[in-house]
Length: 422
Image (tube, rainbow, N blue to C red; front, side, top):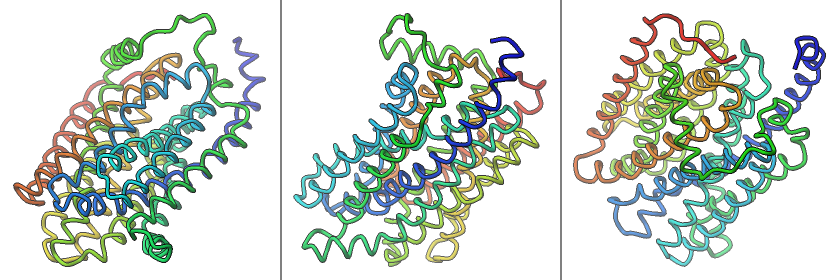
């Protein structure tokens, strides 16, 4: 496209961008409400079905694993068909997964419950992909802000999901069902709403307008081959590597500590406060996202990653010191969420702009695959570590990981400025 054509096309692209952001706002609110509702009860329901805390983290691990393993095929589907078809299919699958998990919880069939949680993870993959959709048509100097707006709007659903957990449980109990099944059933409705919003409003498709679709005559390749090619692109860019590390460390630390917090509070007789703690945690994840995005655009992605690593470490450290003090666990989980927000927004923006436009969708899918797998291992290992060594060891390990990220970002920040792909 010539420079004159690009200039003439700019108003149309920005009009599509505004419509896309509006659609993503509604999508994220509903999609995150579904995930938050599920997370608020998943570990508790898993422990109830198993009669033990040891493998209770498997529920959250399977959700995270589902999000991870679908990331590459979802990205590949979007690269060929567009953002809209991929997101709609993902939310439909997640709604089916929530239905299956609810039925399994009621029937007390843990293997079936685990499968349902895995499918719910597909909805989480769609939620995470939303930040990349926001970046498709964003101007380079506003890219982090666009990503942060989408992350921030998830606050509405993410906070209200756990907050309404008690009402959702009561609704299930009044219907003669297991109380812990209620939030799963509400999750079905939230996922369906998210899919309907995308199907109705995401027109035209932002990836099509951005020119990011694969060429019609491009040969199909195996998903493994596609992932390998994407990782090769990441390896060639120092910015992409740091962005990936920031996302992975932030996600793994957050998931591991957050997953075991309800059980940790239950051990100290604070189970009734766990849903509120998760709500405050999710507020930290999403509530200050616009500020994080503006900061990343003004002072740089690397500096935000550095700050995020420090906040992440502070959050995990306070969680260790909390002990029997409920107030400190609220503070620690809020900081844990805020550190995650900095790592995700800074890392996602740095990753996206550090690779060529044609490779972005594939690289984004590969990055979310790694982030999801590490998060799943963190969630699964968290139960084992807590049961065998204690919650404080789990939080200490997360603190060490945050320090490693801080060192990596600081070292990168001292090198010559990293070039971006525009």
